[in-house]
Image (tube, rainbow, N blue to C red; front, top):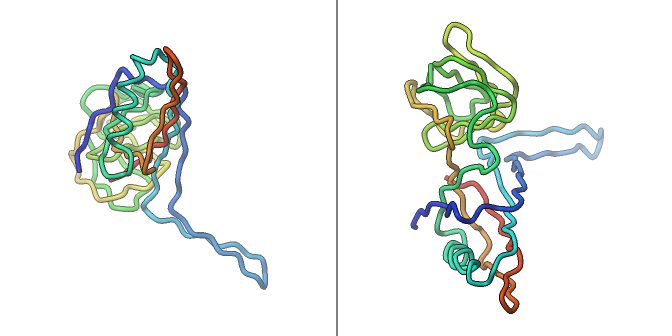
Length: 194
């Protein structure tokens, strides 16, 4: 299984985000009551639409997505729409305390703020901040959108500048529509993996 970097030349025209919850829900046939249980396997997914281009310029996209189709090979990809936080977190922050698998919050040793929707990486996981937060005495307590998938030790660096997701293209094929001199826009589905 190889891991590739997403080509910076293949900037999407549109990037649709999805949050895939790992949960089950049941409804009682007797009372109608609903009960749900969440698990620590939540992930993000994206639909990328590449713009129409000249046929010669479409060859790179065609080759790249044909290679990674099938879900075996992986890709490191940044979120093109959110390269840095909208908040003021900068510098060299680290985790202030260990994070347990399944946690929905963590503490960052550093100064500044994070706004709802800001992305940051810790270890090999990328997190999205749930609500605005700022430091109190040099510690930022962050509420997370998705649970931590595994334990992370205190002192692990926090990456706020272009954190990267590990993704794959789970479908068994990719396609590109060609016509004389041009290629139509290409749409691909990518899903976060670990």
